[in-house]
Image (cartoon, rainbow, N blue to C red; front, side):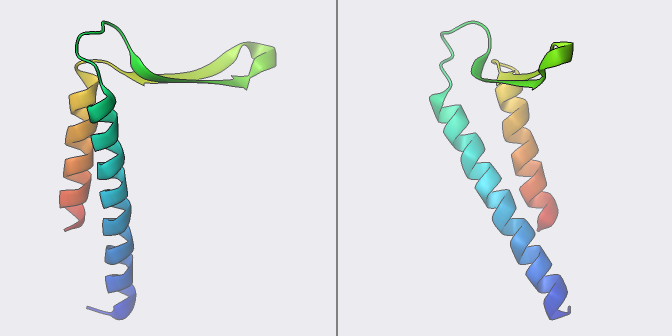
Length: 77
C-alpha cells in the first residue's frame, strides 16, 4: 500500500470519526418526548424564487443518521 493511499485512508477515517462524533452530539441533544422535527436548520437559498433549504431530524431519521455514520466509517476500514 503506497503512502498516498494510506494518507487518503487516514484522512477519510478522520472525517468519518468527526461525522460520527457530530451525529452522537445530535443524538444526545435529541428529546424523544418532543413531537416533530428537532435540530432544524433553515437557509434561504434563492429568495427571489421563494426557494429555501430546511433540514431537521425526527424520531426515525435520527437513527438513520446514526446508521449512516456507522456504515460510512466502517466502509472506510
